[in-house]
Length: 59
Image 1 (cartoon, helix red, strand yellow):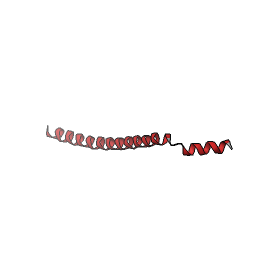
Image 2: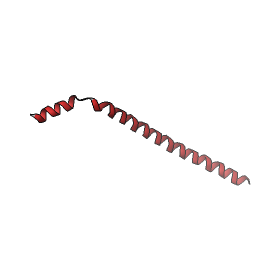
Image 3: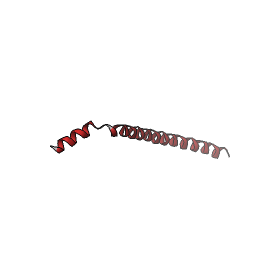
């Protein structure tokens, strides 16, 4: 009987929900930031390579 009482009290306990939501939002922001920086890094590397090739061929 105590097990059922404990399970029911944990089911109605809402204290951890907000922390979980903040954790999920932080994880989503981190994934978006890593993806954006990786894409930007790839594009920037291609741009520097192109500029370097053009400068190398003009000298």
